[in-house]
Image (cartoon, rainbow, N blue to C red):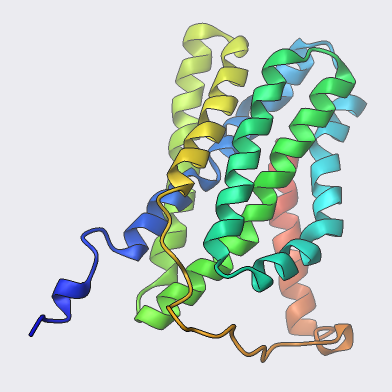
Length: 229
């Protein structure tokens, strides 16, 4: 009779998810350090650079709930994550073929919107699988921070050696790495598992509580500093 250990995959779902999380914010890492400098080197004004940063975030505010509903209706969150990661990688290639403001705004926004759409779905998927298997979500999420930090460090040296023109190949390359790594993600819903029963808030007034609003405000302040960079 086979043991329970023999039914476990050689590479655990947690490790496969962690490896993907390490790529999740690689493009954000190189962008936070050098996107503004690269935009300026292209001759764009401060207002135009601000629009490059603001437009993807604004669009995601509108699309977030829609993406969440699509992910919940999919047979597995893995599909939605892979589609978003592949879309982000492929769309980033468009940046290699444009030079004007509108072309860069289009492909920059689409690339980042696809990536940002993946993040909450990946978080929910990782929390689901760790809760089911009794493992630690925080350990998986830490890989995202490590990947971001390592990329910021590496990008600094690459730009030092090759100049700011190295930014775009780095950005596109990391987007493609994320696309490829996403193909190794495990299935997040157990076979035969029904969609989780929603026990959270269903109306806006249910979350209009001081503890929630203060947490949201704190997160907003922290996240806003990324865009200032």
